[in-house]
Image 1: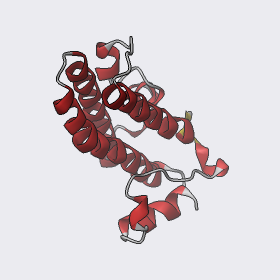
Image 2 (image 1 turned 90 degrees about the vertical axis):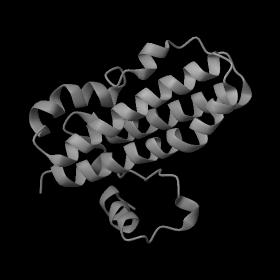
Image 3 (image 1 turned 135 degrees about the vertical axis):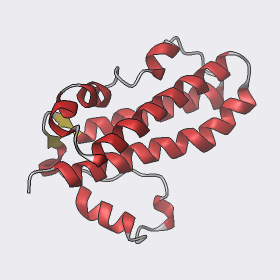
Image 4 (image 1 turned 120 degrees about the vertical axis):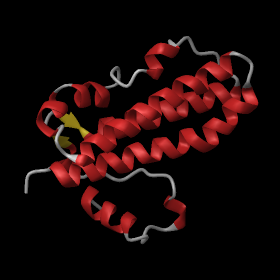
Length: 153
């Protein structure tokens, strides 16, 4: 199923309950969007989700810089949003929503990591299972919605 078909099914409430966490299949014909590989952007966020989950739930040590995690300009999606996409699509409300939720995702990830490092594991676990997971899914959903609004017809 392509991105747009997936989005239509999601917004209509037609996805099975087992698909509560987003991971849309990206058709190779839809992957490259104006300089951004959508599949890489989605996979990058899923990788951070797994990495932070391992740090919090398994107590793994990670030398990643909290400031870099909290910045929404370091990852590929963030660089694209703050650069080319901002110039070209900054006028779209879908762009503004994506950029806002992406920034919230990174700030929450930074706070989650900081809580974990400061021995506040229960709070880090609550954030991981709650706000962080929800924001991760929302970034993916808003990315697909932005794609649907901005793609050439």
